[in-house]
Length: 207
Image 1 (tube, one colour):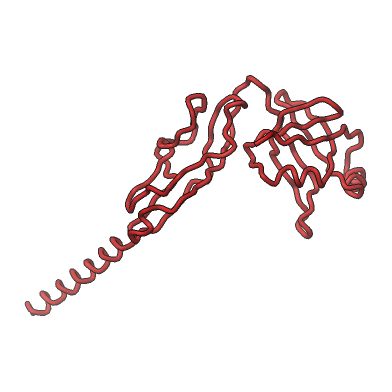
Image 2 (cartoon, one colour; image 1 turned 180 degrees about the horizontal axis):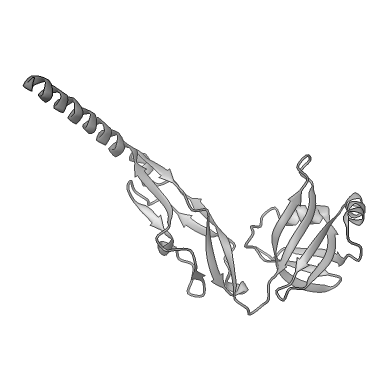
């Protein structure tokens, strides 16, 4: 997928009054935070931003062009109006080329586990994985195929193939996907019930 490019311009005025005026003309006030602590107040076209971020995640690097100067950045925060859902403000975080970064990458599960057909129940407890790598090696999302997963089997973080240039920070023992064998649980409950009934019968016979 080609990199999303967002055209922006420097914003001299700050505060709620100027921000409202910017929104009235179809633009969104925003801030680009740099890695060294500096920040730039900017604004960008609302429609272009909405269309541009439809297919990206928090780990997707976009290009922000500010009056002809380009910055690679993440969309770190999007503030919305709770009544109508319109975007009120956007925070970008600059990514420096050649410098390792640490961020969370979303996990995308696909496929139907074999274990489901065996009577199992699928569970996907982990939705993102923290990694560290150079910006050029950062995956937009982690694809996990669970179609071969049988009942009572699981996939852990240590099983994920992310490439030799990506260091995984999340613990390797954390479960990404598993299939619990529901039938086995039901049978166990029945066995416990039968055992309890048998013990009750033996007690009654002795008395």
